[in-house]
Image 1 (cartoon, rainbow, N blue to C red):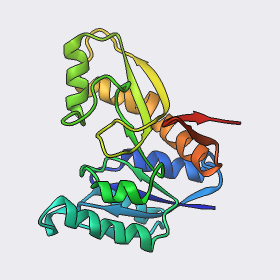
Image 2: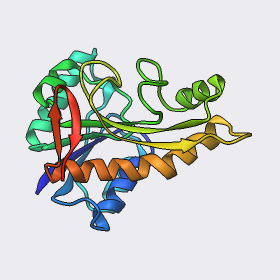
Image 3: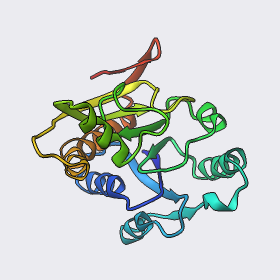
Image 4: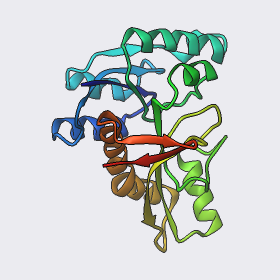
Length: 208
């Protein structure tokens, strides 16, 4: 059984999708062993506590720079014996020290079809504003491994979602969460925990 550590900063809707998936038996051979928040007021912490999941707070504001914060976070991950780290609305970019310590063991969900509308500065509603501004007809979500570059790690799963006439960034965000993010993130976690994701030439392949 693999230990899944989830990093959060806000409301925790993706965390809730993971909790529900674990409770419903969708996540196989893994359990959420700890939720770590960069924000002491994150509602995600309440979601964890309600489901009897241990929580830890490593406040970003308590550290002078990203390097010292990442060192503190790395200590927590090591203490928790993390097998898989899931970024679920975690609003701090990880220092390369964490990425190097956990290669191909950190995954993130991004609310667009990478390589579109991704990278530095593309997060939250900004992603959907850009997609609508460009006039795309299809957007979606991507679960990928995390490397040293923002949103540039190996892609695990993608799911397309149609853009509809009259969509606002908020409406599109909600549809992508419901139809894509909350489905493919738990699936990717389950595949990882079952050792069904293999890396070939820096690309992720799902095997049966």
